[in-house]
Amino acid sequence: MSKIVCVLYDDPVDGYPPAYARDDIPTVRQYPDGQTTPTPKSIDFDPGELLGCVSGELGLRGFLESQGHTLVVTSDKDGPDSVLDRELDDADVVISQPFWPAYMTRERIERARNLSLIITAGIGSDHTDLDAAIDNGITVAEVTYSNSISVSEHVLMMILALVRNYLPAHQWVLDKGWNIADSVKRSYDLEGMHVGTVGAGRIGTAVLRRLKPFGVHLHYTDKHRLPAEVERELGLTFHPTPHEMVPQCDVVTINAPLHKETEHLFDDELIGTMKRGTYLVNTARGKICDRDAVVRALESGQLAGYAGDVWYPQPAPADHPWRTMPNHGMTPHTSGTTLSAQARYAAGTREILECWLEGRPIREEYLIVQGGTLAGAGAHAYTAGTQ
Ligand code: NDP
Image (tube, rainbow, N blue to C red; front, side, top):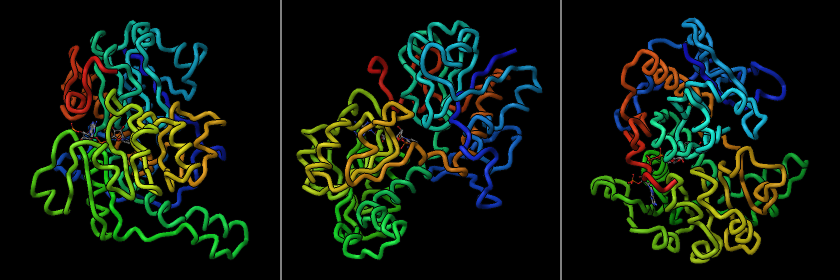
């Protein structure tokens, strides 16, 4: 029998379950590339429920306990006295979400003598030391595509919120004002602007497709060029490097994974090459931007706005400067954990567990590390030896 340790974010402060705003969510069976949404044998939750918090348990308890496995669910994940650290020594599986990541360091991986599977309920496994997973024969899997469209919608929302100065205008309403000049003195139309994405994978391409009807000029940079027909269809301008792209843009959105090439890519130097008043939206990973360089650029006006939902570390401490810097539109890490996304990645987590417990292969597209090497989606997104 296996022991599964699942690290999830805290319940809502006003209790669980919440009063839901809607009674159901649309059913999505296929992603834009033709990949099917998760196909577990069954699920024990109603799609649209809050599953990503401790009481939601990713809908896994009935399924695991009915087979005699042990499920430990906690939000207490950091520091040597944390529940995660106490439960790790004999854990077979660790599950966490990037929104509230269990940082699976080499030390933790090597101490967990039974550990054989680490699941990211969501996308982006940079919180796991992949080299340590490779060295210790551990499988790492994530639920590829489960929340890519969710994030792309968040990116669009944030671009519009910054460019149109939505949040300060809304604040005037909350403050009982009718301050039109104050609200519009930083408000522009997106139409006609040059918008570029660093990374044109699942999320980046979805962002480009959604931006097309806004009448903007679209740019991208990526390690691999998109097919010529996609470039033509969307009217894309390709740039070989971020350094060549960002000076051309009014808005830049980051949609690349965190690895050695992208860590602190947006530093004083790169931001200094952008046009004064560029907007930067980062829903990829906090560490792709130099924390203090972003603050300095907002204070000087080099950046007109910064928004995103990814921070380092997570949860961000109360004194993290991104909470108080000017002209920001930050959220906690929420873009990929809408109730709609949760239904997909909870089902995907169940699918991965069903496969692992029954000795069946896990879908290739869900694999990051397997058999002592990068595998599946991981072989595409990451480079061994660079974590
Ligand atoms: P994909 O792997 O589909 O796309 C990532 C793209 O980035 C790939 O096309 C890749 O290139 C490209 N890329 C990698 N390195 C660079 C680089 N140095 N410069 C330019 N492009 C680069 O991933 P997704 O679109 O699904 O997700 C992207 C990232 O978004 C994830 O890694 C994750 O960190 C983050 N994410 C955030 C979420 C949130 O809730 N905020 C949720 C889900 C993901 P190529 O493959 O051609 O080599």
